[in-house]
Length: 268
Image (tube, rainbow, N blue to C red):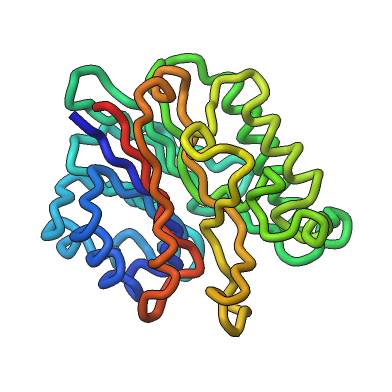
């Protein structure tokens, strides 16, 4: 049996519901983790997603900004929400998932702050918040010792490897690829709990992107992308990892998000 999990920063779930519906019909994920849904819980298109085959839905919404949602064909048991860095922004959802083969999976869906444009925490409060969020995430992770089967997915807003960006040298001082951000994200994995599952399947020397800026006149021709969207897993889930798909074509769909879906297949 296969368990298929997708993460996607949809950049407004109501605006792009039809794109999500197309993706679901074509790819058939068992669990879909969305970030930046940009709506309150009561305005989330619940019925539409139920009709797409997701009876189990968890939402952590916010009016106009942020927000995450986890849609599942398998039962979900909510886990405590984490605010990290002291804010009430809707950036985390945790749930226990009943696995088809028995046992449970701890699944955490997160949306790390983007950090603004200036990579200086003294000059840019948004960048300071981003670093604080990553530090809090690392501290929380170190205190989290249960659940051998665990997956952490979402828009981490950091492209850690040189091959995760179109130009390592040109982006060293650009938010999302600065050394301080890469170091902060690395500290989340410092004890070895998490395996970068996308890079377990796709060799680190191969270029992989999941985001292309709206500012690009022709995003496909310039192909100046970054890998901001990640799927990490515990050692047990790394052993179950079978395949990864980054649906670059979705960036060219009508009215797209600037992110594309990242999907991973596990042995269920």
